[in-house]
Amino acid sequence: MKAPTTQNKPGTAIALKLMAVFLFMVMAAMIKVATQSVPAGQAVFFRSLFAMPIIIAWIWNTGEIREALTPKNLTGHIWRGLFGTTAMALTFAGLALLPLPEVTAIGYATPMFTVILAAIMLGERVRLFRISAVALGLVGVMIVIWPRLSVDPGAAGTAGTIGALMVLGASILRALVQIHIRTLVKTEHTAAIVFYFSLTATVLSLFSLPFGWIIPSRLDLMLLIGAGLIGGVAQILVTSSFRFGAASMLAPFDYASLIFAALIGYVIFSELPTSATVIGASLVVLGGAIILWRERQLGGGRNRARAVTDPKG
Image 1 (cartoon, one colour):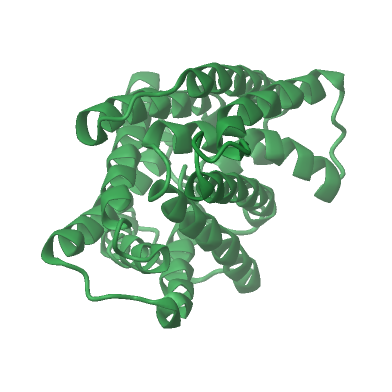
Image 2 (cartoon, rainbow, N blue to C red):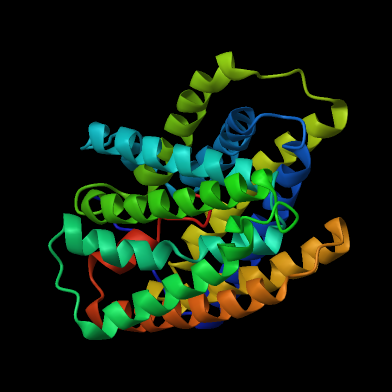
């Protein structure tokens, strides 16, 4: 297997990672607008299809086309695609119903669920230190979504409740993706994991066709195509960042997405984070930071898995 060239350039790595996180938030904003009328499954199709030319060009440029097209565990790629595509669809559906900062904050629950699933599925020992961090993060998640679960119809409404549960479900599925990729990276090249996810997501999203696809307006079509292209560029940037810096060093910069989400939400959608979102997100970030610190100590497959997993599945 051909190993990608790596260099220790932390400044370059951080810049690439921050740019990727920002572009993912721009993509999310475009999807949020489009999914007001376009079904989430259709949005997944456009996001995946139009990311593929960018990803293929990148793989070709890096000289890893053979590694990308010759997987050793095709079934594993299909399962990764199924979990990731479902998570993406749930996130897109949630974006149509919830403010962007709230979706971002709930999405931070993924590391918590990853620890839980790693203990259940991989038999990893989880000591009191990480259990406490998980508990702290989950308390934060509950604070964020609690207003959406209120019995008072005026507090949130049914749509908000459904949206919160969808995004929470997406977080669980992304954690499952993380666990699955820890196994995939033992035999599969990064290029193959990136390529086959885009391919399987494009194909699997077509199964939502009978559930109400529409002919998008010109604006929605531009947004969907743009989201796919920007998502592809962001995927390349986040993957490339790991060639210049360790995954454990770069992981905390994922939390910059909350700042970008708040800025974009305010400028484009006139959304302001609620006090529950700010307090809950702070606890989730703290719990996640503790888990990331512990993951850095453990290293190994966790870092390699993180290098090929993006914030949107």
